Image (cartoon, rainbow, N blue to C red; front, side):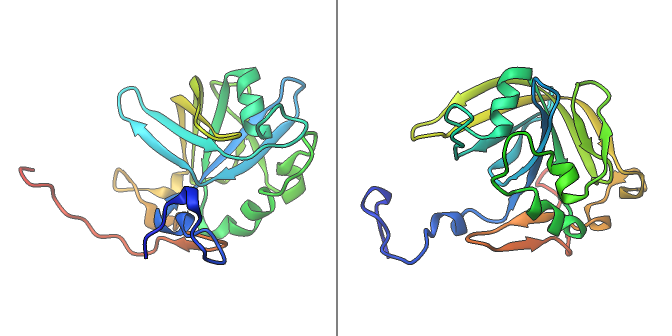
Length: 201
């Protein structure tokens, strides 16, 4: 099968989401200028640089009350900061609950029953029990072609690692089983890990 996205695919559901998988989930927490906390998962997310450490996530939808974007991106535009919380399998249900199209004044931490903690370097809440949380200072927002497609890049200026995830001096992902996004309504969990040395190591 071959198709051009501009012509459509003819399938019941868009296959593009299922092609680039698995994708890590950035569970983004922000605080609005009025002080309301927001929490939402994004699977267009990744780390993009080591020095200084930097991450990105893309928001591809809009709410009528948010000037062509969603709550997370709107808050970041206003405050210049955000926190990336890493999603684990054990928190899959509350992560999914926080993905709803709630009004901007809804605190998803409270709505989903997620305990929050205070970030150290930015005025923002984070998920207290997350395996890791990355406190980020916005570096730029890039608008992509298409309606409501924005990418936020942030420099990581603070890192929280859950103590039980550090084993023999490494951050061990097998201790919490990262949750990943597949296509459609599908997810997966990482439970098997193997290592391969690079040529020349």
